[in-house]
Amino acid sequence: MPIAREREIHIRLEGVQKSFSELEVLKDINLEIQNGEFIAIVGESGCGKSTLLRLLAGLEKPSSGVIKINESPLQQLNTNARLMFQDGRLLPWKRVIDNVHVGIPDGKKEKAREALCNVGLENRAKDWPRTLSGGQKQRVALARALVNDPNLLLLDEPLGALDALTRIEMQDLIESLWQSSGFTSILVTHDVEEAVAIADRVILIENGVIRLNRQIDLERPRQRTNLEFRLYVEEIMDNIMKRKKSNIHPLKQRILTASM
Amino acid sequence: MKQWINKFSIKIIPWLVPLLLLISWQFLSSIGVIPKRILPAPMEVIQAAQTLMSTGELYEHITVSLGRALFGFFIGGLIGFLLGIFNGISRYSELLFDTSVQMLRNIPHLALIPLVILWFGIDETSKVFLVALGVLFPVYINTYHGIKSVDKGLIEMGKAYGLKGRALFFTVIFPGAMSSILIGIRFSLGVMWLTLIVAETISSHSGIGYMAMNAREFMQMDVIVLSVVLYALLGKLSDVIAKYFEGKLLKWDI
Image (cartoon, rainbow over all chains, first blue to last red; front, side, top):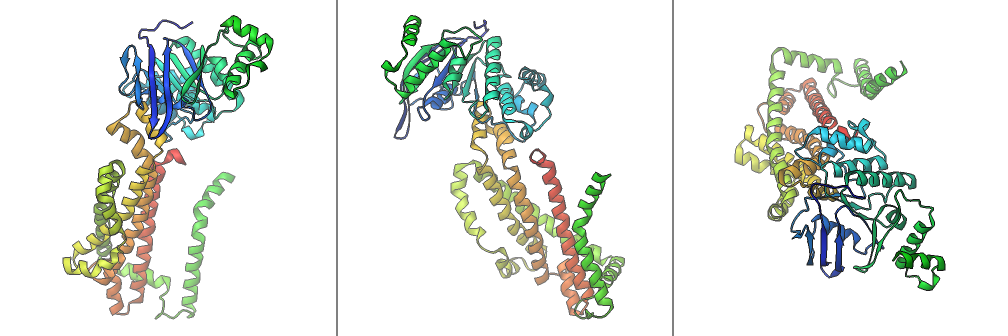
């Protein structure tokens, strides 16, 4: 359950379309995101999911259509949002603590230290980024993204390059920080299981349009071995792979119709 | 203990070969295998240095040469650095200047010596001009290239985190270009000495190069060799200083 925040954020995408010269990446995206929601966007590579995230961050402008943040159209950099990338993108010439500090240009060092504490790396504050492992780098990047207490956390496949174990650790960390801080979060991932494990709602983008918008009604913490969990994963996978409906297990169909 | 020996040997080993050469040179000279007219013995070179030091001549020549080198380096380095920065950041500046700089770069600056002598005579200006010209291009190229090749992902990150203008430059772009800029500086230090030696040898009435040319008139082999040794020492010294700054400025990378 999202906790109450001083500043709420409601996002609405209306007919968002984005082309790069001839190539139409996003065709007609209509989507509403509630305050405090955790959304996962999945899809094959090149389907436009990362572009959608960049539009939401305000790094790019839609070719047509509008993104409304709290009912006002997003014109420039989205100051409500913080973006986390697949490759940590830490500045190698800044120590860990100073990298976190980049997230609050005029803030106090104390806040950076606190953010580093939240990701469990307070003892590495004085180290150079190159001495960290891949997972630790992403923790620092997460601390940097959250240090300014953003309303919206945008995650661009941040766990894609990590090994399976570190990945699950990071998913748990992101989930618990989300639960305790109540920010709204949008995760782009190619890992359907990850999406089902962490998100309130999974959105499948295909050829630039939303093909599936599935609410995940599972209790947290979610058990990956749970049958319902597997069925959600399978349903989304089927949609990605365009498997025929007839292949679906009868039990699954029953559960799915019940949940709809 | 073992570590201490290791550290010690790292400092010593690079000097073993020069030392060995020096000893055999001295030995061969003293038994007469190397005639004095061809190459004076190391001890004679040291004696020449002592004589020139006692008259204050050596000190004066070194100061004059060092002054020219540093002044020319400062001017050329500064122009090259600023041009590199501007052309690296601004598309318009790049369009306007880069082609011209690239054209000038391909002229060997030493080929301009006759022209430079006619323009400035053989006093200080001509040497400083040549050194500045020689230093400008390596600093320019490496600064420009360094700025251009800063990781685009880091720049995007900086922008996404609200950095722009000066903050973006000093947080992301400049530190990202630093290692390349330092390579340019180190390389241009070599160009600086080379240019100075040539300029001083061809036309001058002071400086180390002049000292060597003057000694040739009087067949003072020891002074000529001393000049060569001085250039080697000064070159090594500037390299050591450059390396020191590299270590300081790039400590995140070592």
